Image 1 (cartoon, rainbow, N blue to C red):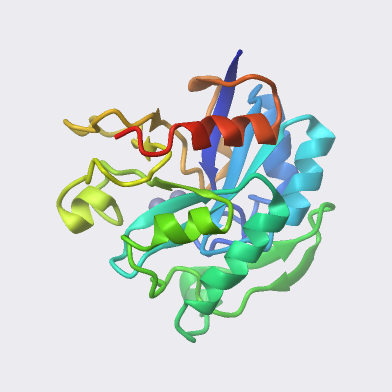
Image 2 (cartoon, rainbow, N blue to C red; image 1 turned 60 degrees about the vertical axis):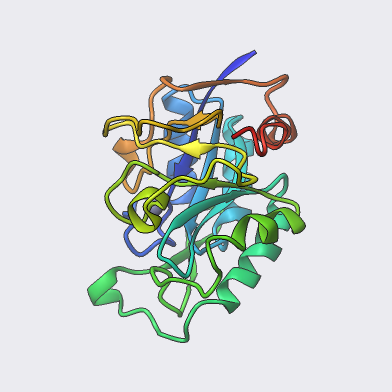
Length: 235
Ligand SMILES: [Zn+2]
Ligand SMILES: [Zn+2]
């Protein structure tokens, strides 16, 4: 079946994410827009995934748990997991690879952790917008070892993308797909990789409409994850 998905959304944990991007609001907006599945992918952050799992369940929207990891080369890579538990374990490891530089909320924005009732339960200390010391070449294997799949984010953007930062798209990497930012022209050669179009929403209004569809078996996290995993290395 074809399901409407938006697999790149930031919550209020990302300093650049709007404060209205709470777990309840994101799930509610996804429901209103008629999306079948969404992914929460905060910058190097996992802390809002447990609440997001509950709010998505309440609205009947499938959650694909994820993170948007910044590699040593400042490339943004989406890492998706079949369960919130596995995403959180991976997320903790990613955060150990962040430099010990504290966030300055007045400069970068708050990094809010919220529960399923959208109450602020904490703030994350280290600045999440930094590069980790994980190499772009090492991340896909690390992510897969921990049960996930890796997708280079917005490869056609001028910053923080595989093509902009490294100069090329390797067609032999074990990526499950490549993400192409829908507001910019398609890159010329994406090989055989599955192409994802997602919103990279930092505000509620930017979450996608029913405009991008993937065909997987049933409306579940497992089925969506298995679909992506089956596409690994199709380049
Ligand atoms: Zn990004
Ligand atoms: Zn993003």
